[in-house]
Image (tube, rainbow, N blue to C red; front, top):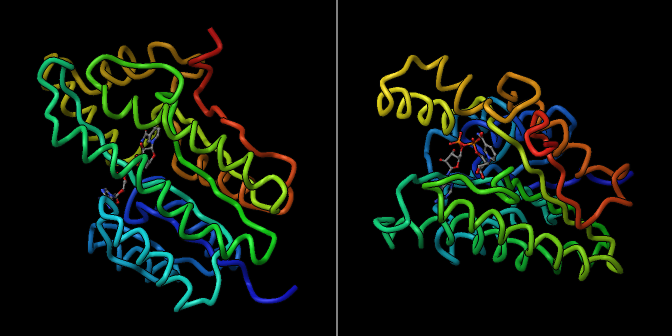
Length: 252
Ligand code: NAD
């Protein structure tokens, strides 16, 4: 009953974020789609969401996103922290600026967005925070120091928010996917193929799916379906959890 729930989705212009925006709009939610890529306007329009153009590596942009949701819709019920980037380099030469950008976007922005959305969720005694982490929140891969560190940190933020939100009707959970078929992964496949001089299918089979029991990439809509569940009333007993969607990667 009452007005539809309001969701903020970050990294909404492509991949998993785009799939989540579509899923939420289909469910009748009001969605603020946040992305640094202005192309996101078209994605948001097509799905029926409102677009907010922002580079979430700044605190002003994080606070601005929540203020925009309040201005447009009057409240914030659901926060999906999804925006992310990758940079691959050995520790020894990993650029400090890339480290800081990745930590700012993938750990500090989720913290600031959670902090800004929290009072509105507390007021209505209902809130859902879903952090799109990664299988790299529990295992590492060489060359991904910043990404792996940010994702491990995001699990800590998720658990802390779960404890503090427990009495307030606010749940916080993380989703940990293995490789999902998105532009982020497609560019990694192309890079690795060039780097190792192998066909792209070989990169997928021998590098990305080496540890997978199910030998295929995950589709963005499959991640969106789990986000949708965790953001729903049905998931009110689930909090502080890290949900693997990893094709069996970490079963061994
Ligand atoms: P993607 O590149 O398709 O989408 C990421 C979006 O984030 C893009 O639209 C991009 O413009 C946006 N973005 C980048 N920097 C930003 C900034 N500074 N401010 C605002 N927006 C910014 O990637 P994806 O694969 O859909 O990844 C989404 C999330 O899922 C990321 O957090 C990623 O780490 C995580 N993830 C992806 C995979 C995978 O295999 N694709 C696996 C596990 C986890």
